[in-house]
Image (spheres, helix red, strand yellow):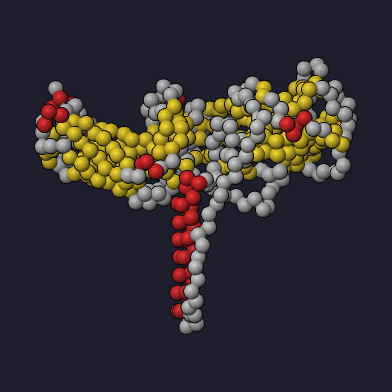
Length: 392
């Protein structure tokens, strides 16, 4: 039955320059929960390689054409029968005919568009893959898929950080100010902040700092919202006094984080929140959430690509300016060497940093144990605790 099912052929996809490509770990597509390492590509990066079709026992293989597709799609796990394709490019490798021996076909997707980063969540998956199909009429068409990962690199200037400042409390009982150094962090960044106790008449027992991940999929009646606690710290054990300050330093490097996703193809969103939780002696809980933006910053593995892109952009703009000047009859030519701009990544480490994830309390970072009197007055958006314990 090999002639009917196409089992007498084996398809292999081999990518060019794979040994020099960076790799990253992700969940496998077979829903087994296993981790696999895949090559990483950027938006606009060319994908090329070859497709090898090996015939078993030297048998012939009739076909109605051989094609390769580059596909980007979104799958919602509660509706597995429907997939949303946002990228679909097809290349023909061979016209209809007959394979009499094992053959190899080269392919290339130049400057392939990859608008979104790959994502594997609890209820949704965004993936990219190559798919080879040997088209056979009235018979099973053999196929082969090759998944890849896509990273979307962004850059936010750090010269003008947007400091987060908020005031929370209960009237005549508790007044706390907390501030963080900025609202946007890259995945290897450090969240730095301080908590000020202005008024403390409530007997607090514990204060926790949590990093929450919220995934929203679907719309309307099919909307599903999942919240996951990425990490939790106990910042304080015991009741503070008026005027105390607790510094905060949260390292993001060891955490399993993804960039923030904003309404991707109207299918899903992923957001992150800093959650401050206060627990009093009567076990009542009060909390305040603040959303932060996470993004992926370029690293050394992609520095040659970002540098080339920066150089190309600079040369194009200069060439355009020269052409405009020539058209106005006042062009002057001066030699100038353009240096490609590159974005460098910052790495942080802490010798005694040992967080525990998935909701377990981790050890307090060293700086969080310091307390110092409040010396300056901070201004921010005032808010109060509601009766059910939410700080609004």
